[in-house]
Length: 281
Image 1: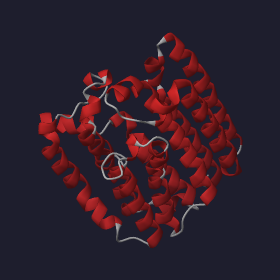
Image 2 (image 1 turned 180 degrees about the vertical axis):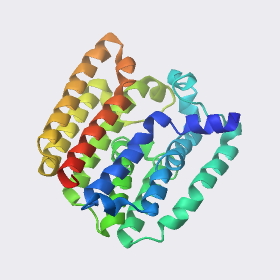
Image 3 (image 1 turned 30 degrees about the horizontal axis):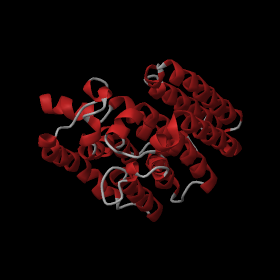
């Protein structure tokens, strides 16, 4: 039971929606009517994009980040520190949780196979060598397109085709901004460990400016599909970046950052229902 609690904590339940959310948005965006989604396959992959997929993303991250994580105060309570002696068991748990799903993933159509393989590639090599994108400024944020791949996978699962390239680009801008913003509270720990990230290179204020531009770009590009909701959401994120700049000055950014998952869930909720009400009802 203790090991299960440890694995669940490693999988970051508060972040599960980052992967599961794009999956269900991709499903509803692809469907022409609600009954089209009543398939066991969609439910099974929905289960995969909760605990198993998140254990893969964050478990691999924690395995290769020990030298940085041990210097990061938030690992003592907000997250979990994976000590070297726990790595082998964690690798085994990641494999056990993902094997069955990954196996059937490659039985789909070619777009789903490509999207699924891309998700695995970006999820693993964001943290793992030889690429270890998280230690390469700007590539670290770009690799967070891994969070878009469940949506691409779901859309392809229903339609047999990739979604429009422009919406993937918009989503990629959003996830890149999401990563860059999340890297700011880790600047001191990353510098102490000698880890270069977009935030350590650019500093907090320039990183926030980059985030604001990316969020604005995402909103403008996605407006073709999401309309006014897209512009409204992106404007809210730009305001968040401005509030965060003030928080940097007062030393309260981490307090604001802890509300970031809730803000992202709220944005995803609006996007989901904007699509669902328009297409399915």
